[in-house]
Length: 598
Image (cartoon, rainbow, N blue to C red; front, top):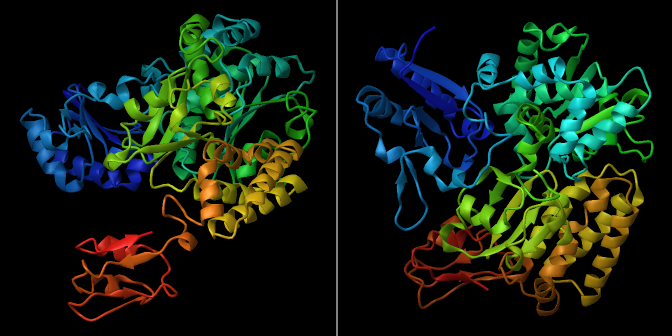
């Protein structure tokens, strides 16, 4: 076996790939071969490192040097300096966003990673997800071996129950109890399902785990199948995640070749076969009954419960469904013990939670934090705060059907009970940060538009109620709202919440309810004053040119897409308010800041 003096890890997750990491990898491969270093330096494709804002990311070991925003043009110098001369290339190191601009040489010292506790993400960014041997080298499939060879199904179930793991898909139902229901259900055929239909705007937790460490999910499902008594399972992953599906296919094939999936696994009488079902991208298929209908080849629409899937799921058989993050926790729990896992987190919310931290925050990316950490710590300590010196305004938790929380609630602990008490939900882990330039009414309208479009239409409360709510929000943003509209919004929201069949409809009003609760003054400003405080809503703002400042350079007129600006060269220009579409392009290009918005 070859011994390498250095390992170069190149992030090939979706985020870094979109930023050009494939070209960086190819350039590194070519440069190492050209210099004859390919026998000394091992080049590794990895999944997501988490710090998506900094991609493409290249990490060089043993130094642990964390290089950011690397381009193919940087590669010759990187190889020359670091891999040939042994000198860290300072200019590509991660640099803090503060005024001092500190360069940090080792990735562990980067604040983004400092407060995280990576259990599910422990392999993401560190192993080649297409190589089962690298997963095994990190204790992969050891938990399965322990479960099959040392523990009975009852003992394995007891470990999961005592760990306190709760489902990471949103509701937070105790995982062990859910498994127990399916285990105790009568039936000679049972199914295991992984819900990877992650469709929230800005969410990429499950996708990144599948791209970076697919075997952890496969191993978790194998252990769950052993406990429940299942011999067949499905991973339901939307077709919009081609890289995740590609790596899942490879992982399953490799596990089958090693006898870890199939008949008589590890010489025992336990057999299990795993399939991938590609979803068409319907948000409602994240709901478990709609997901099962889709697997069966039916239209993805929710069904009333009971019966619950544990008793009657896929093709009427007992079925257990957990999401990607839940399954990926299982191997570490079995390997390290229930007490180890339950020592992390709070009394009622054990372990860690992965968040997709997006929006107006310096360090957008994938974060795994201990339960109980405050929102402030996640957003400002890990996330690095708000860019460009702007003020924090709100954070949307739990995806499009989550809730919007203000600055006064930044010290709220991130656990199921604390978040639910605010009117928001933990959800699967979306966390969208906004700054002072965000219009909260428009923000709520965005999420409600998404949910309304994704409604399957089965029940009138969701189908019609969300449509009427959206119409009211549109009126308010257009300056046509009335104060009674706010009461009507709340009344409709409560009816949709109470009357909808599934969780999609039941939680759809959350963005509206929480923004009305915490940001009612902005609704009033739109409705009474006919003003948008954030200066975002086109119908409530206008752009004007200060004739005392305008130098007549004509840049604004040339940039205007609708020819709304007129004037002679070197003389003040004028905006035709009837023609202006409020795009803001004129203000963006004005060299003397003569254009303002009111």
